Image (cartoon, rainbow, N blue to C red; front, side, top):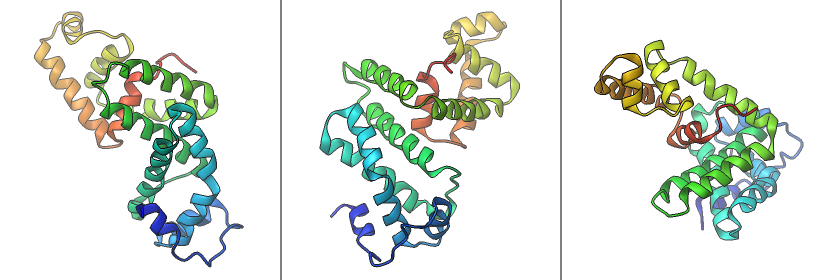
Length: 205
């Protein structure tokens, strides 16, 4: 039995259907399996629909959504979520990115990634704007010299050699600054978010 299925079958007699999401998050942090069960029943259908609309494979879509629910349970002690609906739907999309990253060598990788970013933009403009603002906040926290190089690479699509020539520095310096920038970003996010950061349209929204 998958991990998430084992969890949601426990403590099944407790009815939390009238609880607000913030109350469920508090119970989740305390290790209450019934809170995860309520989130599961509350959001499963919409998350599965979102996953299936992109994948078009039922079993794979189910697996994605299972993983979306497993992560907050295993990281419940330090979980910080303000909007559960937005968090879970974004997590579903990030799970899609994870799947794509694992298939990066496939011939249709770029096509599928483009389809996913288009889907993100079309599915919920407000969510995308919130996500974009959050990502931009991460970039702003990078030291200025690293940030300038990062933006030239991401926003102007310049190669390391072009950046080095533009700024009058060595390619090795550019590589080092980019490495430091990515290390800084990884301290506040994960690989899927970094992938999203590079592929979402910069000027959108």
